[in-house]
Length: 403
Ligand SMILES: [Mg+2]
Image 1 (cartoon, protein in one colour):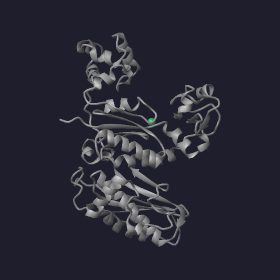
Image 2 (cartoon, helix red, strand yellow):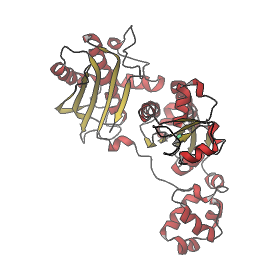
Image 3 (cartoon, helix red, strand yellow):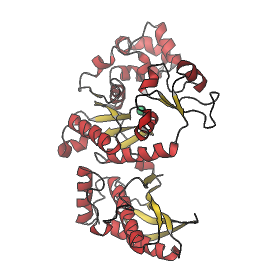
Image 4 (spheres, protein in one colour):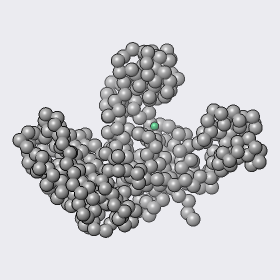
């Protein structure tokens, strides 16, 4: 069996990097995100420190009061989680352009299994480089990537050369790669286990790998066997796509200016349906229930849903339902936000590979082009807006929802 190509993608100093990106005056300065929104140096812990702040010893999870002592000249900011979630959505969207098998671990890191993508997109290293480049180009942020045949090794690798790193661990070299690292780098080794292992004279992963199994068993029980496997680089856990547990898939768009233009509203809904349909197909899902979210300029928010007898993952079919729902709620007021989501995933096609059924060739072609060239590369002719301000493919106002 050919070894898998697993990527671990980890955004660099994520919250701080987003703030430095959006506020050029903060670039090159120590930025600490996690301050008490009320100000002062009393409460809160460091969520993310920029690399400039790390030079002062400021680290994630450090109490803000201690960070102040280490780095009084730092710029302390409260977290803007809504903004980070938006950027995270954008990054996850990019990752989904390389494989359906994306397993987010947190807001700023994910595993990808790109084994099946190698035929179309090049070997693991090529995919990793292209993925880093797309993140940089589309978000102006950097990610560090580890490439290996297992999740464990990919995760350790991504952390080795931050920021903007790419560390490749060739199959067969895992044990050598891990050997010099401290044992706490292995999953499942907390301070307690670290102490127990120290009693056996084990400090590095290499020490652990060399240990006789029975000695470890006596000390740590079955946990010991798992650790030994990990220390030898043996980890066959699969990457599990998040949509396997998702209850609904949706997109929404907030207009930069509230609008009453029937044309803009219609085109926005069409584009949202296309985005939702593409996401369904990416996850091998078909949905029976379509929900419209509608918010007018007075912030009155309505949702309307309809369940159809047949499941679908085609943009036109979603739009036919959404357009009827929209006409049922739309009044004289201007519209602030529109959202479309799909749920009620049937057993049919809940598996990648079956999902092509019933999808028009045009939808499939659009997916392929979007995956190759990025979101917005191909927009339905009827969606194109010469004004551009309310172009729904403009992601400043759009948000991917995965619940
Ligand atoms: Mg990170």
